[in-house]
Image (cartoon, rainbow, N blue to C red; front, top):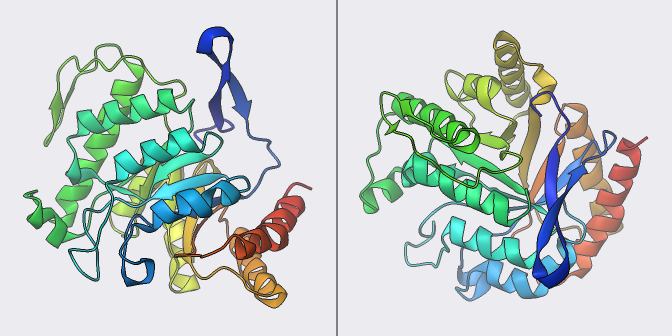
Length: 322
């Protein structure tokens, strides 16, 4: 990322609860990461209880002992029914950050229009500090128009939303690195917007985007990580190449941008199913994906979780560390 190995800070506690912070460098041979997407929605399959609340008690203690990152979606209400419960993303991720101190933390992804940019920057800096440097700012231009309208937010055309996103990113990085940052853009302004304590290191920024005209070129210019999904392989490869070409035009090394991909599928119930998933992920790794964000829905037990760990994660990590 950004020309240097990913570094994060973990707390090391001393006397009387005081803490210092120890730098932790990912091994340069740690070529693949695995993320766990925990649904904050409740629906008929979860007795209308937010799934993350069940997972926090019964699934995540096992899963997050083996996964690298935890991801939480940013919406306000359900998709099947507006009355389905849907927990707010920042509050939920902060709650989980305190419970699971050894994983990276990312939203999947924040809608930039849901929160004023200076507040987003301050919240990110705070969570980065409290979590010991484990936070990744996952953010996008926003897409769910009905949700924007319902909550009283403006929903401008895509070109404007992406222009706003670019200003949000500039504001965040200024507020994370400067004592008295000011910024005057077309859409947002800050004036000596101090946000102490400055986070160290600054959070990497993961942009969720798929648009080939605006979004993906922005990823290449500005992002530390890209989060996408694949419908057709040829289309995804074209999108990946747009990101890399944009990075080169911006004077960046294309491989400084970590590529994450979200995959929605059930956990394997058999050895054959594990082998099939592993084959798929190995193929994606060959295309440049290094961070697999797994959406397994609502698993009821840890048995298939451990099967995935033992038959997919562990052998892939071994293969990619040679």
